[in-house]
Amino acid sequence: MRIFKILAVIIILLGGAYAASMYYFVDESKNFTIEKEIDYPVDKVFAQFNNLQNFTRWNNFFTSSPSIDIDYYTPYEGQGSAISYADPKNDTDGEMFIRYENLNKTLKYQLFEDKNENPTLVDVKFKPVSAEKTKIIWYVHTPKLAVWRRVQNFWTEDRFAENINKSMVNLKNSLGNKVEKDNQMAAIKYDSLMVENEEDKLLLGINVSTSNKKDALYKNIVMNYNKVYNFVTMDLGKRDDEFGYPILITDADNYKDKEVSYFLGIPLSKKIGVSDNNFNFRSVNPSQNYVIYYKGSYEGRIRAIQQLIQKAKKDEMRFGDIRQTFIERPMEGQEVNVKLSLSVYK
Image (cartoon, rainbow, N blue to C red; front, side):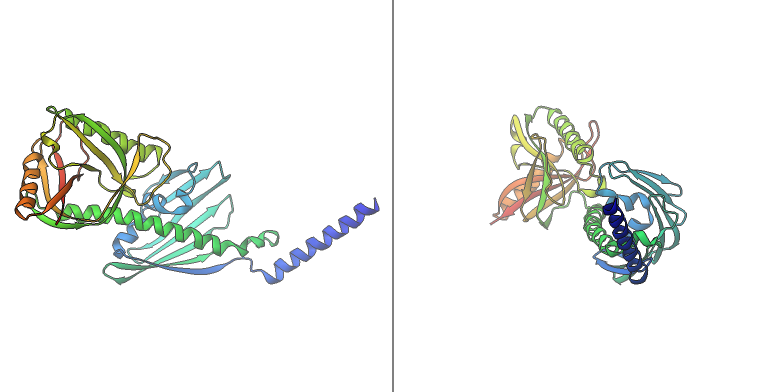
Protein backbone atom coordinates (compact mmCIF):
# COMPACT_ATOMS: atom_id res chain seq x y z
CA MET A 1 0.00 0.00 0.00
CA ARG A 2 2.85 2.32 0.83
CA ILE A 3 4.25 1.94 -2.71
CA PHE A 4 0.89 2.96 -4.17
CA LYS A 5 0.78 6.03 -1.93
CA ILE A 6 4.30 7.01 -2.99
CA LEU A 7 3.38 6.53 -6.67
CA ALA A 8 0.22 8.59 -6.20
CA VAL A 9 2.23 11.43 -4.62
CA ILE A 10 4.78 11.31 -7.44
CA ILE A 11 2.00 11.40 -10.06
CA ILE A 12 0.35 14.35 -8.33
CA LEU A 13 3.65 16.21 -8.10
CA LEU A 14 4.47 15.53 -11.76
CA GLY A 15 0.98 16.56 -12.80
CA GLY A 16 1.27 19.74 -10.78
CA ALA A 17 4.67 20.51 -12.27
CA TYR A 18 3.36 19.90 -15.76
CA ALA A 19 0.30 22.09 -15.17
CA ALA A 20 2.41 24.87 -13.69
CA SER A 21 4.91 24.80 -16.55
CA MET A 22 2.09 24.87 -19.10
CA TYR A 23 0.36 27.72 -17.26
CA TYR A 24 3.41 29.94 -16.85
CA PHE A 25 5.54 29.13 -19.89
CA VAL A 26 3.17 28.13 -22.72
CA ASP A 27 0.70 30.55 -24.28
CA GLU A 28 -2.95 29.51 -24.15
CA SER A 29 -3.27 30.33 -27.87
CA LYS A 30 -0.90 30.92 -30.76
CA ASN A 31 -0.57 33.72 -33.29
CA PHE A 32 1.65 33.32 -36.33
CA THR A 33 2.03 34.48 -39.92
CA ILE A 34 3.05 32.52 -43.01
CA GLU A 35 3.88 34.08 -46.41
CA LYS A 36 4.12 32.44 -49.83
CA GLU A 37 4.34 33.59 -53.45
CA ILE A 38 2.89 31.90 -56.51
CA ASP A 39 3.40 32.69 -60.20
CA TYR A 40 -0.22 33.36 -61.13
CA PRO A 41 -2.42 36.51 -61.25
CA VAL A 42 -4.29 37.48 -58.11
CA ASP A 43 -7.76 36.93 -59.63
CA LYS A 44 -6.86 33.35 -60.58
CA VAL A 45 -5.44 32.66 -57.12
CA PHE A 46 -8.27 34.29 -55.17
CA ALA A 47 -10.85 32.14 -57.00
CA GLN A 48 -9.17 29.04 -55.56
CA PHE A 49 -9.67 30.35 -52.00
CA ASN A 50 -13.13 31.92 -52.00
CA ASN A 51 -14.82 28.96 -53.72
CA LEU A 52 -14.74 26.16 -51.15
CA GLN A 53 -15.30 23.48 -53.78
CA ASN A 54 -12.09 24.67 -55.44
CA PHE A 55 -10.39 25.07 -52.05
CA THR A 56 -10.91 21.47 -50.95
CA ARG A 57 -9.52 20.13 -54.24
CA TRP A 58 -5.99 21.38 -53.58
CA ASN A 59 -5.74 22.02 -49.83
CA ASN A 60 -3.67 19.20 -48.35
CA PHE A 61 -5.83 19.06 -45.21
CA PHE A 62 -8.66 17.67 -47.36
CA THR A 63 -6.77 15.93 -50.18
CA SER A 64 -4.43 13.91 -47.94
CA SER A 65 -7.16 11.59 -46.66
CA PRO A 66 -9.10 9.30 -49.02
CA SER A 67 -11.76 8.67 -46.35
CA ILE A 68 -12.80 12.29 -45.73
CA ASP A 69 -16.39 13.21 -46.59
CA ILE A 70 -17.28 16.86 -47.28
CA ASP A 71 -20.67 18.59 -47.45
CA TYR A 72 -20.94 22.02 -49.12
CA TYR A 73 -23.52 24.67 -48.22
CA THR A 74 -24.83 27.54 -50.30
CA PRO A 75 -23.79 30.06 -51.50
CA TYR A 76 -20.69 27.82 -52.10
CA GLU A 77 -18.56 30.89 -52.85
CA GLY A 78 -17.61 34.03 -50.94
CA GLN A 79 -18.93 35.39 -47.66
CA GLY A 80 -21.44 33.08 -46.02
CA SER A 81 -20.28 29.88 -47.71
CA ALA A 82 -19.49 26.89 -45.53
CA ILE A 83 -18.54 23.23 -45.42
CA SER A 84 -18.67 20.44 -42.88
CA TYR A 85 -16.40 17.42 -42.99
CA ALA A 86 -15.98 14.06 -41.29
CA ASP A 87 -13.09 11.64 -41.54
CA PRO A 88 -14.03 8.36 -39.81
CA LYS A 89 -10.66 6.74 -40.51
CA ASN A 90 -8.77 9.52 -38.70
CA ASP A 91 -11.59 10.11 -36.18
CA THR A 92 -11.89 13.82 -36.88
CA ASP A 93 -14.60 16.22 -38.04
CA GLY A 94 -15.29 19.92 -38.21
CA GLU A 95 -16.82 22.91 -39.95
CA MET A 96 -15.34 25.78 -41.92
CA PHE A 97 -16.89 29.16 -42.77
CA ILE A 98 -15.97 32.22 -44.83
CA ARG A 99 -16.99 35.12 -42.60
CA TYR A 100 -15.67 38.03 -44.70
CA GLU A 101 -14.62 38.66 -48.29
CA ASN A 102 -12.97 41.63 -49.99
CA LEU A 103 -12.64 40.53 -53.61
CA ASN A 104 -9.06 39.70 -54.64
CA LYS A 105 -7.75 41.17 -51.37
CA THR A 106 -8.90 39.49 -48.16
CA LEU A 107 -10.73 36.44 -46.82
CA LYS A 108 -11.52 35.59 -43.19
CA TYR A 109 -12.11 31.93 -42.30
CA GLN A 110 -13.36 30.25 -39.14
CA LEU A 111 -12.47 26.60 -38.57
CA PHE A 112 -14.15 24.55 -35.84
CA GLU A 113 -12.34 21.25 -35.23
CA ASP A 114 -13.57 18.18 -33.36
CA LYS A 115 -16.50 19.83 -31.56
CA ASN A 116 -14.27 22.59 -30.16
CA GLU A 117 -16.57 25.55 -29.54
CA ASN A 118 -13.68 27.99 -30.04
CA PRO A 119 -12.62 28.39 -33.68
CA THR A 120 -9.25 28.76 -35.32
CA LEU A 121 -9.28 32.14 -37.07
CA VAL A 122 -7.43 32.43 -40.37
CA ASP A 123 -7.19 35.71 -42.25
CA VAL A 124 -5.70 35.44 -45.74
CA LYS A 125 -4.47 38.48 -47.66
CA PHE A 126 -3.65 38.52 -51.37
CA LYS A 127 -1.15 41.05 -52.75
CA PRO A 128 -0.26 41.33 -56.46
CA VAL A 129 3.54 41.31 -56.76
CA SER A 130 3.24 41.68 -60.54
CA ALA A 131 0.69 40.93 -63.26
CA GLU A 132 1.63 37.24 -63.07
CA LYS A 133 2.68 36.82 -59.42
CA THR A 134 0.73 36.94 -56.13
CA LYS A 135 1.84 37.01 -52.50
CA ILE A 136 -0.42 35.08 -50.12
CA ILE A 137 -0.23 35.88 -46.39
CA TRP A 138 -1.90 33.73 -43.73
CA TYR A 139 -2.57 35.29 -40.30
CA VAL A 140 -3.49 32.48 -37.92
CA HIS A 141 -4.96 32.74 -34.41
CA THR A 142 -5.55 29.40 -32.66
CA PRO A 143 -8.24 28.91 -29.99
CA LYS A 144 -7.42 29.04 -26.28
CA LEU A 145 -6.50 25.67 -24.85
CA ALA A 146 -6.95 24.35 -21.34
CA VAL A 147 -3.73 23.93 -19.34
CA TRP A 148 -3.64 20.18 -19.88
CA ARG A 149 -3.84 20.55 -23.67
CA ARG A 150 -1.46 23.46 -24.20
CA VAL A 151 1.38 21.14 -25.13
CA GLN A 152 -0.31 21.01 -28.57
CA ASN A 153 0.83 24.58 -29.16
CA PHE A 154 4.43 23.38 -29.47
CA TRP A 155 3.69 21.86 -32.89
CA THR A 156 0.64 23.80 -34.10
CA GLU A 157 2.63 26.27 -36.22
CA ASP A 158 4.87 23.58 -37.72
CA ARG A 159 1.86 21.43 -38.61
CA PHE A 160 0.08 24.38 -40.22
CA ALA A 161 3.20 25.39 -42.17
CA GLU A 162 3.71 21.83 -43.44
CA ASN A 163 0.11 21.71 -44.64
CA ILE A 164 0.54 25.03 -46.49
CA ASN A 165 3.77 23.84 -48.16
CA LYS A 166 2.06 20.72 -49.50
CA SER A 167 -1.05 22.69 -50.45
CA MET A 168 0.96 25.22 -52.45
CA VAL A 169 2.38 22.42 -54.59
CA ASN A 170 -1.16 21.18 -55.26
CA LEU A 171 -2.38 24.71 -55.97
CA LYS A 172 0.44 25.36 -58.45
CA ASN A 173 -0.39 22.15 -60.32
CA SER A 174 -4.12 22.93 -60.33
CA LEU A 175 -3.65 26.51 -61.55
CA GLY A 176 -1.09 25.37 -64.11
CA ASN A 177 -3.61 23.05 -65.71
CA LYS A 178 -6.38 25.68 -65.62
CA VAL A 179 -4.23 28.45 -67.09
CA GLU A 180 -2.76 26.14 -69.73
CA LYS A 181 -6.25 25.14 -70.85
CA ASP A 182 -7.49 28.76 -70.88
CA ASN A 183 -4.45 29.92 -72.84
CA GLN A 184 -4.74 27.12 -75.37
CA MET A 185 -8.42 27.85 -75.98
CA ALA A 186 -7.78 31.59 -76.38
CA ALA A 187 -4.87 31.07 -78.78
CA ILE A 188 -6.58 28.70 -81.21
CA LYS A 189 -6.41 29.63 -84.89
CA TYR A 190 -7.91 26.80 -86.89
CA ASP A 191 -6.32 25.47 -90.09
CA SER A 192 -3.26 27.75 -89.78
CA LEU A 193 0.16 26.08 -89.69
CA MET A 194 2.35 27.26 -86.80
CA VAL A 195 5.67 26.39 -85.19
CA GLU A 196 5.76 25.75 -81.43
CA ASN A 197 8.28 24.63 -78.86
CA GLU A 198 6.65 22.13 -76.52
CA GLU A 199 7.83 21.33 -73.00
CA ASP A 200 8.21 17.82 -71.65
CA LYS A 201 5.12 16.00 -70.38
CA LEU A 202 4.34 12.94 -68.31
CA LEU A 203 1.37 10.94 -69.58
CA LEU A 204 -0.53 8.13 -67.90
CA GLY A 205 -2.37 6.04 -70.45
CA ILE A 206 -2.77 2.90 -72.49
CA ASN A 207 -1.12 1.30 -75.55
CA VAL A 208 -3.55 0.18 -78.25
CA SER A 209 -3.56 -1.58 -81.63
CA THR A 210 -6.79 -1.53 -83.61
CA SER A 211 -8.40 -1.63 -87.04
CA ASN A 212 -8.30 1.46 -89.25
CA LYS A 213 -11.56 0.67 -91.02
CA LYS A 214 -14.18 3.41 -91.46
CA ASP A 215 -15.31 4.76 -88.04
CA ALA A 216 -13.66 1.81 -86.23
CA LEU A 217 -10.55 3.78 -85.22
CA TYR A 218 -12.43 6.73 -83.74
CA LYS A 219 -14.85 4.47 -81.85
CA ASN A 220 -11.83 2.68 -80.42
CA ILE A 221 -10.26 6.00 -79.39
CA VAL A 222 -13.46 7.09 -77.63
CA MET A 223 -13.67 3.76 -75.79
CA ASN A 224 -10.04 3.89 -74.62
CA TYR A 225 -10.26 7.56 -73.69
CA ASN A 226 -13.16 6.69 -71.39
CA LYS A 227 -11.08 3.88 -69.88
CA VAL A 228 -8.16 6.20 -69.14
CA TYR A 229 -10.38 9.06 -67.92
CA ASN A 230 -12.33 6.78 -65.58
CA PHE A 231 -9.12 5.26 -64.21
CA VAL A 232 -7.57 8.67 -63.55
CA THR A 233 -10.69 10.21 -61.99
CA MET A 234 -12.23 7.23 -60.19
CA ASP A 235 -9.35 4.87 -59.33
CA LEU A 236 -6.73 7.57 -58.76
CA GLY A 237 -9.18 10.17 -57.44
CA LYS A 238 -7.96 13.00 -59.71
CA ARG A 239 -10.26 15.90 -60.57
CA ASP A 240 -10.54 17.53 -63.98
CA ASP A 241 -8.51 20.57 -62.94
CA GLU A 242 -5.62 18.34 -61.82
CA PHE A 243 -4.66 17.14 -65.28
CA GLY A 244 -4.33 18.36 -68.86
CA TYR A 245 -5.95 17.57 -72.19
CA PRO A 246 -5.78 13.93 -73.40
CA ILE A 247 -3.02 13.26 -75.95
CA LEU A 248 -2.87 10.51 -78.57
CA ILE A 249 0.59 9.66 -79.93
CA THR A 250 1.02 7.67 -83.14
CA ASP A 251 3.16 7.40 -86.29
CA ALA A 252 2.63 10.43 -88.49
CA ASP A 253 1.63 8.52 -91.62
CA ASN A 254 -0.10 5.43 -90.20
CA TYR A 255 -3.50 6.79 -91.25
CA LYS A 256 -2.83 4.82 -94.46
CA ASP A 257 -2.35 1.48 -92.65
CA LYS A 258 -5.00 -1.21 -92.08
CA GLU A 259 -3.89 -1.52 -88.43
CA VAL A 260 -3.07 1.48 -86.25
CA SER A 261 -1.01 1.46 -83.04
CA TYR A 262 -1.24 4.42 -80.68
CA PHE A 263 -0.70 5.56 -77.09
CA LEU A 264 -3.51 7.53 -75.49
CA GLY A 265 -2.70 9.29 -72.23
CA ILE A 266 -3.64 12.07 -69.83
CA PRO A 267 -0.92 14.49 -68.58
CA LEU A 268 -0.21 14.29 -64.84
CA SER A 269 2.18 16.41 -62.77
CA LYS A 270 4.14 13.50 -61.30
CA LYS A 271 4.43 9.73 -61.23
CA ILE A 272 2.25 7.85 -58.77
CA GLY A 273 1.80 4.21 -57.97
CA VAL A 274 -0.42 2.39 -60.47
CA SER A 275 -1.56 -1.13 -59.66
CA ASP A 276 -3.41 -1.85 -62.93
CA ASN A 277 -0.97 -3.23 -65.52
CA ASN A 278 -3.20 -2.03 -68.38
CA PHE A 279 -1.98 1.51 -67.72
CA ASN A 280 1.54 2.88 -67.85
CA PHE A 281 3.47 6.14 -67.84
CA ARG A 282 5.11 7.63 -70.90
CA SER A 283 7.47 10.60 -70.93
CA VAL A 284 7.24 13.06 -73.82
CA ASN A 285 10.50 14.94 -74.40
CA PRO A 286 10.68 18.65 -75.26
CA SER A 287 10.43 19.19 -79.01
CA GLN A 288 9.92 21.63 -81.83
CA ASN A 289 6.57 21.01 -83.50
CA TYR A 290 4.69 21.98 -86.62
CA VAL A 291 1.13 22.55 -85.41
CA ILE A 292 -2.36 22.81 -86.88
CA TYR A 293 -5.63 23.14 -84.96
CA TYR A 294 -8.42 21.23 -86.61
CA LYS A 295 -12.16 20.96 -85.99
CA GLY A 296 -14.42 18.57 -87.89
CA SER A 297 -14.91 14.85 -88.52
CA TYR A 298 -12.11 12.62 -87.25
CA GLU A 299 -11.48 11.31 -90.78
CA GLY A 300 -11.00 14.90 -91.97
CA ARG A 301 -7.88 15.31 -89.84
CA ILE A 302 -5.90 13.39 -92.50
CA ARG A 303 -5.66 16.45 -94.76
CA ALA A 304 -4.25 18.52 -91.88
CA ILE A 305 -1.69 15.81 -91.07
CA GLN A 306 -0.64 15.73 -94.73
CA GLN A 307 -0.09 19.50 -94.61
CA LEU A 308 2.24 19.09 -91.64
CA ILE A 309 4.22 16.31 -93.33
CA GLN A 310 4.50 18.28 -96.58
CA LYS A 311 5.76 21.31 -94.65
CA ALA A 312 8.42 19.18 -92.91
CA LYS A 313 9.59 17.71 -96.22
CA LYS A 314 9.68 21.12 -97.88
CA ASP A 315 11.81 22.47 -95.02
CA GLU A 316 14.05 19.38 -95.24
CA MET A 317 13.18 18.45 -91.67
CA ARG A 318 12.94 14.92 -90.36
CA PHE A 319 9.85 14.16 -88.38
CA GLY A 320 8.76 11.78 -85.66
CA ASP A 321 5.45 10.98 -84.01
CA ILE A 322 2.34 13.05 -84.38
CA ARG A 323 0.47 14.08 -81.24
CA GLN A 324 -3.26 14.62 -81.29
CA THR A 325 -4.31 16.75 -78.31
CA PHE A 326 -8.10 16.64 -77.80
CA ILE A 327 -9.14 20.17 -76.80
CA GLU A 328 -12.64 18.77 -76.30
CA ARG A 329 -13.09 15.21 -75.05
CA PRO A 330 -13.63 12.71 -77.87
CA MET A 331 -17.26 11.55 -78.04
CA GLU A 332 -18.85 9.14 -80.47
CA GLY A 333 -21.01 10.78 -83.12
CA GLN A 334 -19.51 14.24 -82.57
CA GLU A 335 -16.90 16.34 -84.35
CA VAL A 336 -13.41 16.50 -82.87
CA ASN A 337 -11.54 19.60 -81.74
CA VAL A 338 -7.85 18.70 -81.82
CA LYS A 339 -4.38 20.16 -81.89
CA LEU A 340 -2.17 18.20 -84.32
CA SER A 341 1.54 18.47 -83.49
CA LEU A 342 4.26 16.92 -85.67
CA SER A 343 7.66 16.79 -83.92
CA VAL A 344 10.44 17.88 -86.31
CA TYR A 345 14.23 17.98 -86.19
CA LYS A 346 17.25 18.37 -88.50
